Length: 243
Image (cartoon, rainbow, N blue to C red; front, side, top):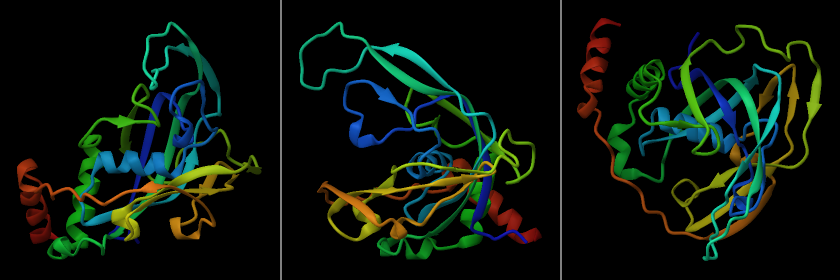
């Protein structure tokens, strides 16, 4: 039976660049072999997000064989000054993932308490997945365009079916943001994932035992964007009347 706060989708792209964002300022970049929790959360937030909810990524399934491709790039010099230096970026090539996720309420946003309607957010999230998202999808970096479509998690053939277990070393998991943490601080989380037959079960953010304090940050919560502007609320009300 389908839970009314759980969604499933497929995301694919020609390239992906999943890195530790703490190392992204200048220099050469090399992608992790698997997507990070934070990158997939960003994909889903681009598909559909409101300040009422927090997306949690439950599982990801790697569909295509992990392959890398190097490309030269001219990195931005954040310290100022012109430069003709070239850097080598190592991307993942021809990626496709199945993702399973769910949302929970953002209890630090009491101003959104009246918007806590599970059926509504589930319905709109599914509709936005069918439409390919509300905003542009990126796979770890802006130059890596992604494409979203509905799927059933576990269906279709994966190059890693019956492959066995692959363990990965310490890897960036995600950020603890002030509006989700309840503190005026930004922290980075790390974990050691393992992939079994192409599937990776993500631990919940609070289960990550390795954390790094990044900096003090005050939450600046955005205003809610109404559903009426996309005529989504009308569709939801029609669905409510026929279920």
